[in-house]
Length: 309
Length: 307
Image 1: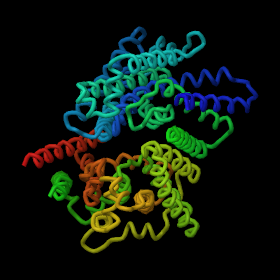
Image 2: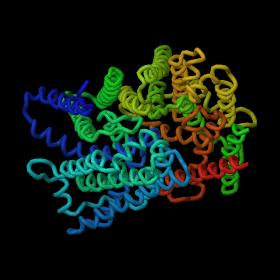
Image 3: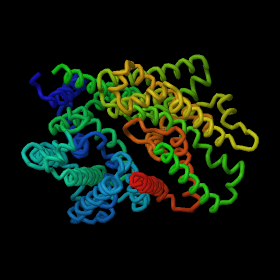
């Protein structure tokens, strides 16, 4: 098999796109693609971060992504307070929040030797409380310019999709062309061997846990601006989505192997599958059952492909 | 020796938290008070045991909360209206858990992803069954959950029973030892002539069984169900297992510890409300307690390693 794993995610996304359009006999193709790019962008940004963490090897996963998104979105909007010309300030606040969250997560993992699952889970409860406390149920609108940016487009493609694309290119170059990416992959494949080879494994881990939180913070900031305000549950669905897009995209859940184009394809696929089921009038229950079945089917297909190699 | 020490810390954390609670609210120190404090711990303890069965074989179950919710919905509808079909559905659910374990092992799939996908399936089925909250608890479950034994409240009796039975099953019995061996070293178990696929299916099936019991116990307490009733159990159960001295790898689990972990988590919630802590901080304080206990464990195990 010479086909790369990411082809499958893109093929599945294309298939879902075509099946949806079969219902409308081709009408609304542009709108559907536009919506997929907008919503897929958020899943792609958090998926890229989760991919880096999962690449670190077995047991590494960040469960604090939703809380980090909510907290950074909330704090950013509170700081901006709907004043015009504060978009940059809000971005700085959001990214700083993400940086802080990443530091706390890594310190818990490194100093207290907690398993990452438990560390990020316990810490996410604290971030959630912080978000509740600072939000107080208020819904602050984002400044107008920022809201226009988040919902706007450039050369026919949503601005948020451009952001995701730029981020993906940066991650891809770092992974494939930079020393840091080699270090990350080596640490994920065999941490002991990497350490003996002189790779600063702990520094790589620190940078990875910082990146995922900063990515989540950026996604939270954009999502809050996109949807007209931060809500306490706005990150909830991205916990499962972030892990699902990594796996569907063809990255190895056991680590040491990452796949940037696959994450993008899988992010589009996750949105398109839901809109496909929606357009065929599936109820919420059936939609969820089918989504789960499709995820498992893809994982099984990927594993039989791997074992045939 | 180490296994004995492992149970010490969960016991101390629970005792400490219990003392603090009694000190804050002396009226809790009664039959009625204890029952109220630990009532909701029964389904959580069962769910924690279910999670422990999976962690025991080095996997993790992210679908447990959705599964318990689905069981709660089945219990509140079919088991109440048509008990025979209800029992068949629940048995089928346990069987599908066992099948999930077999599939994960034979195809070498990552459990974290498969269970993630299954959580959508269970959640969807639950929503399909009960689109709006409702249903009713079968009378006998309600009676069982509200029974008032002499001297010791039901919740405490149930917790002791669950801990004792699962201790015999997991630590003392032959099958439990082999199952923990899977977590310790799968290859050596396979070399010893065991059918690992069947063993993994057994572990998952046991998890399904305890998940079903958790859902039924939950409905007995709440008297109705909805599709999202137990979603938080996924994280609670993982936290409970780890609090109880379990580890993610190596088959190092403690059923008694897991039950104590579940009791500690439940008690933490009550304790925080006794503290008159602003509701904003209640979730966060639970996270802080979790980190605190795990830090204590780290200090503990370092000392153990030094001597």
